[in-house]
Image 1 (cartoon, helix red, strand yellow):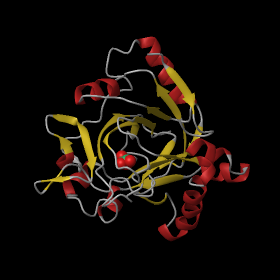
Image 2 (cartoon, helix red, strand yellow):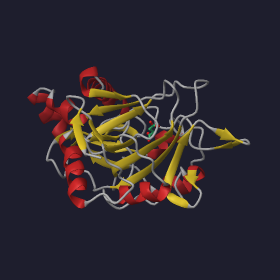
Image 3 (spheres, protein in one colour):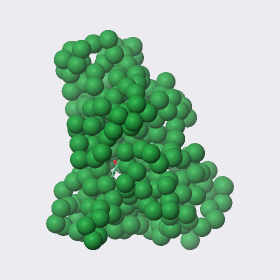
Image 4 (tube, helix red, strand yellow):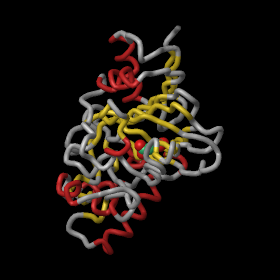
Length: 284
Ligand code: SIN
């Protein structure tokens, strides 16, 4: 097999084939793949990855330390015996959900409500429906670059409040969110424009599921600017839409991307995926 690395989109996305990341991927090949991830807008699409949970975890660890998921809101969906893996699925077996249904159906960057937000997420498509269930990715560096200098300067001085309490009545309304969960991650302020720690790119940093307002403004005052920014970031020219194939492994960089999982496959087919989450830096 020959390693092939190809950009597939002007803003977000590099496809990698001819390599099995579950076997002993040598450090030279990993470095090439990692660099392509940074250079290609923060999304790797690794095709044909037949991975065991152990191999998925081991490859994820090459990107950094994994977020320990036990005790968090996704606890009911952890893969038994593998607390690093969170299952995303519409499957129900003997009345038991095989994963979180309709996870991530809003524009977000993983774990932005935490002080040390996620660096990367690795999602393995083990079963995919024949159509539907796509995942969209928005390039937040390109979106920032396209703003006027005046807007860039204005945003550069602003911070957003990310509060998981908002998710309790929104994207997590069908899940159990307790005071213990909320107390573990109190509302946090992050810069609206963050600098990518590895590429140096300035990126808008938003999450429609948990951002409540711009620090120092009311929610009402913040809303027009935030609404403009969500509409701007998700313009078609900044967005790549991934149509899944079985055994795709996607690696996305939460520091420079938002993503959105389209929940349009009820009655179409089974979708069953394993996700790991790599711990990141405090956004600056
Ligand atoms: C997520 O937000 O992690 C879910 C992504 C997906 O199911 O496509």
